[in-house]
Image 1 (tube, one colour):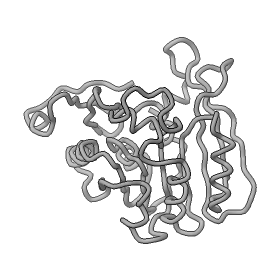
Image 2 (cartoon, rainbow, N blue to C red):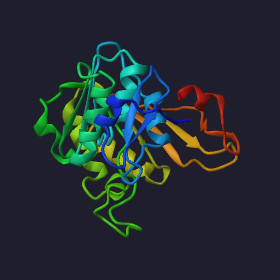
Image 3 (cartoon, rainbow, N blue to C red):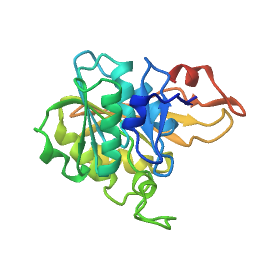
Length: 253
């Protein structure tokens, strides 16, 4: 779905060694990525389609990486302001350059910081919505290089699921909404941690690569201080045949 754009003289000035400029195929938006570090995947795109952000909302994306989620949400929704928090300084810098490249400085901002300390950077209850695409794997399972950008993005080396949920609750206004993409094998833990922090699960959708395959992703919404009761939505199927996206997934892109 993503295409590499022709690079103008101005773009060459904003790119660093090893970086490329990708077309997000939405309102002319472009994103700087470094394939040696980490490029966003379908999970980020699906999350931007699952999140419900009302007109005028303030949103923060925790563990924002190269900023793809707040940048896409700025085009897909009528939210007023989008903040990103990313611990890796060089990736956060890449995100800031993408924000400038797209002329989004008035609506999107990227802060370098640690999710575990998120509530020390912002006022309590100052956001209507939290989005997050956190590391899926527990600590160092299967790792060979714990210092790599990809390792930090995929494994809980810098923060845990509980860190993400705890800080989200502190940042959310009462009744504020939390949207996360994660892996089904951790669903019971996800629900346990959310309810322990009074972040009530309200909506769940499982993502299947094919209609006859087990789910490999989940999308979940929670409400700070919400009443119990969760809706399980119909499954989202990614491919209708090999390398052919379903119509729903094409529409999300």
